[in-house]
Length: 335
Ligand code: SAM
Image 1: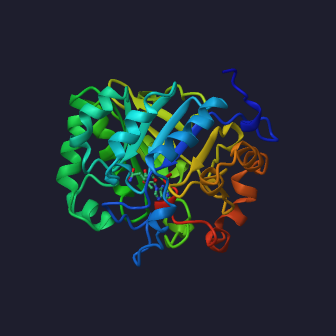
Image 2: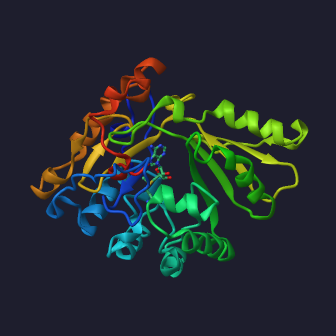
């Protein structure tokens, strides 16, 4: 079938070839910056995509030019049929990857391998067990750390995502980088972003510039190497001379990368989000269940995409918590 790329091109000429699919709103951790303490209003179970629906919608996107799919959540691996979904999606001509908290990763090594998954993103916000348990409101540090080692041993390319929060883990930036001395991992520092119910405050955010200040204080400038970013990459990548791994900064707040955005997000309830910060969503699941074609809805959603951060053009607008109150909590978007 000839690919029709037009429905995934927006009015600014950005071609969307990267689909992120949230498989579930449920998670086995309770990270404070991701999920409100009181929990979230879950979609009724009947409104969550079945594995066949995930596949059908994903295939529609692939037929229109998507070449990369990342599974996320909630925690994608808490879905009982996660392995079925992975195996189905692996039949599509895409680069398949997953973002996970790694709590149960040891049970999926064979599935990952048989699905051709090569790269896995793992969230790890602290190297200190007590702090990790505090931020995740669960006691799984040892399990997660062991599973990260297992992924590396099994030959997966591992990226560690750490959301930086001032006064909580900004004193661990150099410890994280030191981890890359012996381990071939990429540590990615993520600027803390505002979402509904996550008590975001600009003062809690650690910026790209602040991370680099710490780096240049700790290492000789000539040893801090700027390395190539992948196309459409949201991170700026560095490595310390002689270290096995690398580190990167994802500065969604202070330096958004909207110009090269190629991402669209499908939520577990079958709604499409054209931007992480957009509160507008397009329901694909209801029309799919009614036997209608979903392409026109996808096209409309892509055409409606704003140039920058869902229309929040200035940092002042972005810093206003009210602008995020209509957006979902990150737990139901998936990063
Ligand atoms: N459960 C999986 C995990 O832990 O990686 C996948 C879902 S999680 C929502 C995806 C990513 O979103 C994680 O790397 C997490 O750190 C990030 N995230 C969640 N809330 C965030 C926020 N407020 N600011 C920046 N990143 C956030």
